[in-house]
Length: 177
Image (cartoon, one colour):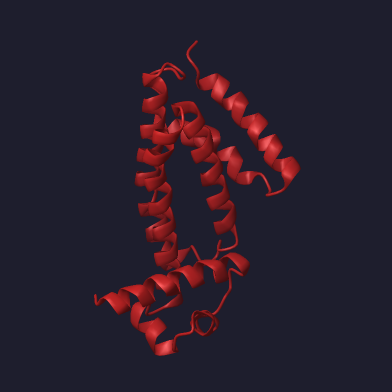
């Protein structure tokens, strides 16, 4: 892909991400207009709305997974785990508006994103086990299920505080006995 085409694609993805965050039913024409490109340019990169939504979703999951090493470099493992699950919860909240759009053809992207997310959780809990802040032998999928309550909390200051308190209850259950 030429550099200018790659730049256009990235710009369209960034604009689409914002448009879909604001309204899950944002139209392709509206996204093209907002990105300052013609419909032909948009459709050349993303032949359908589903393809565009899948690309936004895939890029967001990749960004979430790539966050793990940086968090582990900047924080103690348990604090990195906390920060990552907060970020995951925000990500899921954002995608909630896309519920219907993330079905059918896009469902393959959603399903394929699960393994990298489980791997990221595994990296976090392995670091926590290595420094003794969590017990060894935890299954990353089990930890993901336990922490999934955070995706159900509505984005509001009081709810965020409740999510943090509930996360600490869950983490206490994951610590060394």
